[in-house]
Image 1 (tube, rainbow, N blue to C red):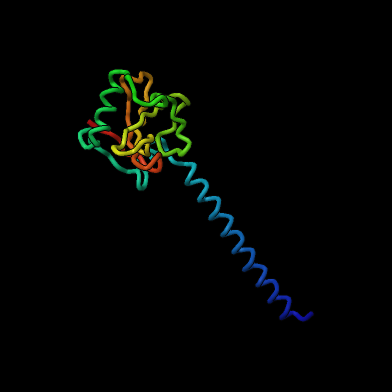
Image 2 (cartoon, rainbow, N blue to C red):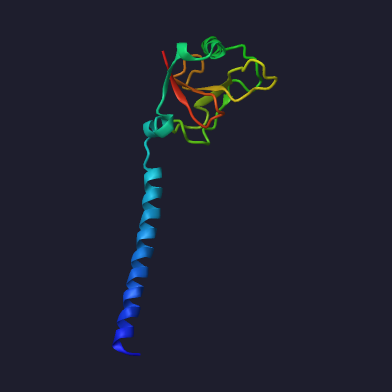
Length: 144
């Protein structure tokens, strides 16, 4: 093999190695950026960076908020149950911090997709509540 072919192979190997390194760094950086989000970032990042006045909730949502403050009674058996935050869209908290409540949708015979998720040590006095109308795909922080 002549010197010209050896140099060409070495050049090609360098290009391949550089591309492989760039790909590995890009994948690693993406993972680090996802993991480096703070709880506040998780709650208010991207499309979830939304707030909703309690008065802006549908009437049924306002009624559910009042029931939460009263401690019930709730219409659905699952209301008040622990919300696991598996989607990781809300600030990270220990299990049992969040509880979910159904917001009834007129005309539906099932629970539908609308929920209010509240977090705090005392269910009747939540620290923060979030509204979702798309079954946990996005949340809006409810403000008074």
